[in-house]
Structure formats: structure tokens, C-alpha cells
Image (cartoon, rainbow, N blue to C red; front, side, top):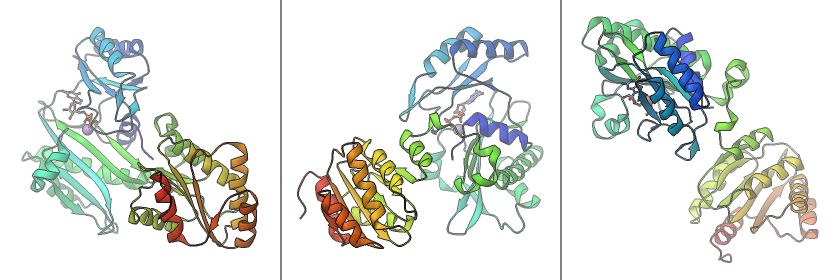
Length: 385
Ligand code: GDP
Ligand code: MN
């Protein structure tokens, strides 16, 4: 689950990381009021920042400085409603403008290879960090952390010195890193980034931006974090899928996939690609026997205009093939599929399923390769090879 920057900033602040205050607003008038308040408190200007689940907001024009409340209102009118990477901005963060001397990067990711949280830091932070990583990777320093011991003070300090020659600043950065490490475990994050971590002319080290991705599997034990979900900022099909108890990830292709089990869903997508197609989604209806889930799955898949063919791949174990067949028939009675459908099912109650489907005018296959080939061909507008 993605958090907005303002939510991530609140969490970082709670963990003792220096983050400027700020408030969110939905209208230019609200932005003006906040800017006036900050001006009265002594801020020489404000920064207005689009709150969307996308990186590169600065480059897209979603982060702007304003010297006066008038300007803040005008800038907010431009940012609110703009699109960043296909997402509409409904919310902005207004914070006192920081004065920046240097920009660094500090982040933690979970590394699959070492199976450890990895601390990454770079003195070349800011909006071009991807370019730094690609062109001058020696400017990015990494440390895999042994979770039995955590990030030890001397390790953090060594990483602090990769950012700053000044001892006080290196210590301040080390403190930020240790608190950030505590945040990772505290909220169940799979990724956390501060970019930029700045120094100002007074020499203070401050976090100006925050990105936090929470592992969905951690949400059950972090209710207060789960409550921060902003469904209006997420893809509508993913929201609907979650509500229906489906695991769904939207992709770019034309073959809408409906599969039971995550492993088989991955294998199905691999096979779609192998036969020259592109999956439109990852969809795992789970191991349950519930026609309603199948109806919901078909609703979500058919709502996507890019989908040209639907592929069912069901391996009946706990999932009963007849339940899936009934779901398909119920769905087609409720709404049109609009595109060809290829159904492969095998396993528990396969015979019953084939009967149900045949009676309703569908063909049912048992061979996975054959089904995928047909679906790929249909997604390209042709007949099966
Ligand atoms: P991102 O582009 O989505 O990562 O958004 P950021 O919050 O990181 O902002 C992008 C860039 O805008 C930063 O790297 C800074 O250079 C600049 N910026 C952000 N906030 C401030 C601020 O308060 N003062 C100044 N001077 N620049 C800022
Ligand atoms: Mn940033």
C-alpha cells in the first residue's frame, strides 16, 4: 500500500526524524489560508506539493514554491486538478519553504537476493537520483543489514560520513538512518525513502520528502496504518478487486487473465508472453469456491477497454470447477463480455463444469498450452493457430 507524502511525513516525525510541519488542502482558498498562517508564524514562503501516488512530481510541475499567500493560491489552482502520470491531483501539501544547501538521498528497501533490508544513501540526492543510479552508481552507497542486530551506531555513522564531511551533520544523518530503520519495522514498510534529505545554511539536516510503501501483508497488524489508505488515489479496478477479495494487479496487455492461485497466475502470464501475447492483469481468485468472486472478476476484467480476450485458467483443488463455471454463466447473464473468452479448467468437478459450460454455449478446454495459444490469437483479433 502506498502512502501519501504528508502521511509518510507524519509517521517519520513520530519516529523522531526532523520533518518540516505542513498541512493539506483541497482548494486554492484553503491553500491561501494555510500560507497566511505560515507567513504569520514567520515563514518567508511556502512550498505546494501535489499528493499523488507517483514519483517525479517535481519534474512534472507538481512541486512549486510561492513567496506570498496570493502566489500560493495561484500556484495551487494550477497544481490541483493537474495530471501526474495519469493520476489527478486532488490534494496538496502546504509547508514552509525550506532553504536548501545540499540534497542527499537516504532509503531502505528489502533486497530479495540478500534477504535483508538494505540501506542506500547518496550525496547526489534530488530529482535526478535515477540518473545518478544509472550513470554514476559509485555515488550510491549500500549496506545490507543483519536484522538480528539492526543498524548499529558505527555503521550508521560510517554511512553518515558518505553524505557529509562535517561531523555534526554526519551524526545527524546517522540518527535519521537509525530512526528510519525503526520506522521500517514499526510500520511494516517494504520501502522508505527520504529524497531529498537536505542541509540548510544553519547546518541542520532535514527530511523534505518522504515515500513509504507498506507491505500489504503487514496491514492486519497495523490497523492505524491500514486506515491511512486513500482509495480515491488508487486504480479503481484494484480497489474493486480488493473489496471483492481478489488479488488483482492491472497490467498493460490485452489478455485478461482469471486464474486460481498466485503461482498458476504467474505461470499463466509467463505462458501468455511465451506465445507472443501480453497479459492485461494478474488476477488470483483464490482457493475459494465462490461463483460471486468469478462474477466480480469478470466485471473488473471486462471494464478494461484494452482487454481483447479473456482467459480462464483454473486448476480445481479446493476450488471447484463447477463453481467457477457457474460464476462464468451467471456473469454472462448479468452483463455482456464484449470480447471472446477461452476457458481451461481441470481438476475437482471438472465434468460438471464442462456440462454447465457446454449447456450455456461455451467451449471448455483442459490443456493449458492450447487455451493460452487460443486466447493470445483472439487477443490479436485472429483465430487460434
Ligand atoms: P518529487 O519530485 O516527487 O520527489 O518531490 P520532492 O518533494 O522531492 O521535490 C522535488 C524537488 O523540489 C526537491 O528535490 C527540491 O529540490 C525541490 N523542493 C521541494 N521542497 C522544497 C522547499 O521547501 N524549498 C526548496 N527550495 N526546494 C524544494
Ligand atoms: Mn523526492
